[in-house]
Length: 286
Image 1 (tube, rainbow, N blue to C red):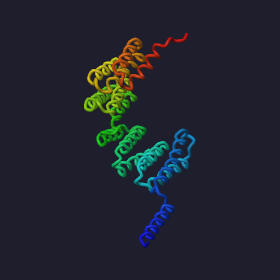
Image 2: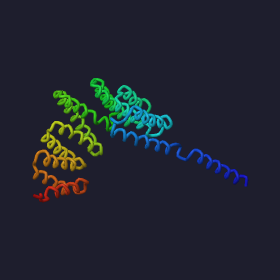
Image 3: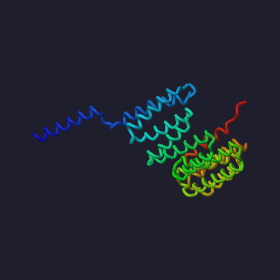
Image 4: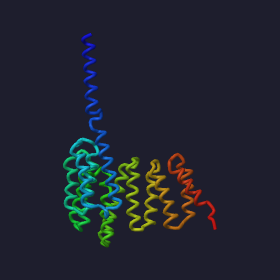
């Protein structure tokens, strides 16, 4: 009987604690506060010209409260990132960079957010027309967090920067370097989902320079070199789109879509190729 009474007492005590503190250890509260702060952030981002310094500070304080109260919560790093973005939007570039750097210092295990923070800091340097510091920060992003999606974007971003600034020799060299890196990454791990993503980055290099024939040749080589991976049907599909939309070779596009349907029927690209072929074969209304 004494044992039963003791167990009942413990059960009542636990129930009382749950009633007083909640059973989610603050997770629900953190998510709720983050949702409200993010909603306000998104509304401000749609019309930043209408926002006052008070509006910015109020949202910054909301995210800051989350970081302070729930430092171990997974989205606290994102809250810190949002603070950096808000300062950048407000035009306080120095403070913005400081806030992005905090991610690297306080959330070193979250490598994806660390990479995003450094990349964002580089973009702020660009807005200040300080390319040397921007380039240094981009290089650091690629060096310190090489396996992140953000780091993969760095070579292409550098090339696009030179292109926008009209620095053609540097842009040409940067595009070649980016393509070399992307091709090697695909070669190392052709059967991974990451390889499919990297193909898009490589194609952006060709597209930025409007080198459509070279892009088609590269896609052909992918289909030949990696016939037993999803790279092959994806390469063929993009190839067909380029023939149609950029090279005005509709018949060639039809041939490739038909090849995808027959040769890669068990892949997700076959169904989409069928839809594209039906669209091309559909009589045009006059």
